[in-house]
Length: 420
Image (cartoon, rainbow, N blue to C red; front, side, top):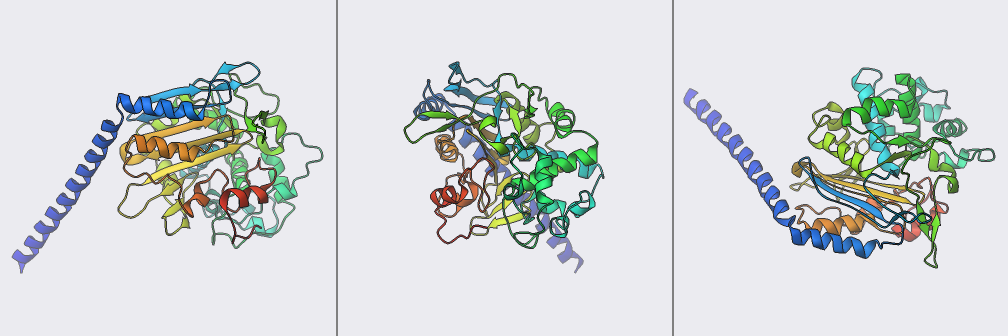
């Protein structure tokens, strides 16, 4: 009997060692596939592809590809401002739209791990709100499962040029309804993240911009990033543009959109050089082993069972069974569009900041990934998945969308979906 137990123990150890070896070989295989793909011909193909998307005399983008603390590709295309004709560079500051949410989530989780609050705490503990919104848990705001009403319909816009997160709170204080019982469904919410920004201020005793600067940007080596604040100049600031039906570009920036200026859901301006520092800090740098990033990259709300798509804390997470996990997010604010796509097992990151709203960045990322033979190319939009990773989040309007119902139906083919 004792010999059988010892034998079973040995077999179990051997089995575990075999599994570890298989996983190691798989990662090595992925590594060599990637680097065999990133050759000079691949660089030429990527550059040629980007020149098709972005011409020299129109609004453009900056693109960066990095792995293992090395920037493998980084280049600007097009102009940062059509009035000056200045070419886009990796030092220019773009509004990064909803990529801001990953910084907001990280900052709040930092306070959580300092013991400042519990994720099961409700909004009513910190803010004077009607019973419905007051009952929402902080964790549900982070993972877009709160059901909290969008602030757009309740905001008094008569005396506001640039809305703030405080205006969002004032709007929610006027509504006692939830779209659904909190924690039961997924519904993307800019409102939720504006409230989280105010919570960061209440818990830390600092303004949202200051807390990011001192506790998040600083440790990551980010020096130039700023949060939009009315009247405060932003050096090397890029101008955003929409494209009219006749093909001309129309300025679409803070002065053209009332809700462009809310902070914690989409107010950060950042250069590509600084964003690369952030990606390095997350994947293999100062933040890589922190509980904040482990929590943020863990799926909290299931969005789509068929595609195993989740929302964590500030990130979309795609983790199909037996395949490589990918993590990503898009951003959309005024004429700005942004995207970041990570493969943590490869320490791979591709990010694009664009100052024109008419380019499909998800499609562009997919094309670049194909050129580089990225093993799990889950970012290619197909079927229902498009609804969940498109720049317009499902069921909820981006803050800059002027006619959401029309845009929703046009872009997501939402024939059977009911808008709230």
